[in-house]
Length: 452
Image (cartoon, rainbow, N blue to C red):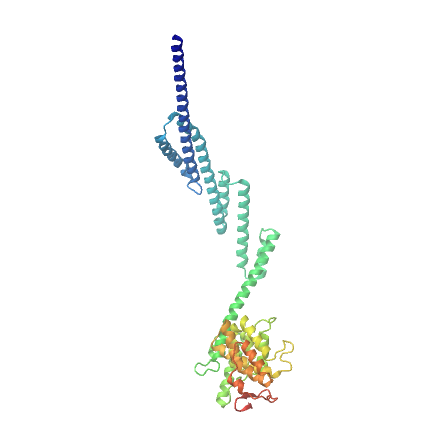
């Protein structure tokens, strides 16, 4: 019996020891779990703070802001922490050593990048204003204080000073009064041979560009005056006067010059005094044809107003010249050239070398059609599809007369007009079936036949 009691007592004692052991282990596990959870919360909070610094350029406050943040984070975690606070304190002290170092380093690196970036901005501004002293002083300061690489800094300073040398030389060159003086200035600089050569090339390009611009502007101004003068040359309500011609910017002599318009005024005045027909009112179709052919030759530059006026009295009438000048911008468009080429083909044009070849009658009708087209575009310039359609519409009666005189099949005529977006006109149906006389200066008048 005594042995049984002893056995029971030993078992109870062992059970009590086992229970205490497991209780102690559970407490330790919970303590470590709570600590791990607190550590995780701490590191997550610090990580979020560090990530929040990306793009933040207020580097001076990195460290003070972190101190305020870590204290607040510590208080939040401690409030909910159920483990041994000393364990957590030991952990945060170790963590803060490394984190503070990283935060400080990030702040310093950011400040260095910021100061270096400011240096490059200041260098660019100083170079533009030619401030040599600031360039040298700012570069030396940046190198001495460690926020600029010495090699990069010295190279940047040398390049900036070289740019100033080149810019100053360029300013002197552009202020020179002649090409010879410009070359003399470049030769006297301390630039390298290749830099001098580049400066000469740049000067020549700039002078050529300026001359082209000045020429373009002057030609536009002259064309505007010529357009006004040729429009008013025979206008009795607003006649052109000799004093206006004298005070104009026109050249003294040549086509469309002061001499040209003085002569035009005098000839008209004399014709009026004698009761004669005003001079230069007629246009030779052959001359107009040559002008139009020249204008649509892609290998030839467009004629200027001066060149057009040079033909007045040499086959061009005043009104025709006026139309050609006023329609210059329209005639130089792709749509006009394409449409005009299509019309020439319909009138029997065989290319630049052959012209209208064996079909001179086509040239007669082509010139009449283009005269009407130019006259209308003078008063009402058109563009795009509207321009093409109106050119076809104005040319239609002349095409119908030409096709009738050429004995074209009605089906061909109808099909061609359809492709051009046109319908046969009543006049076209009434045209005589016979060919016109060989005198190509005659034209067909419905009801009267071929008349002068």
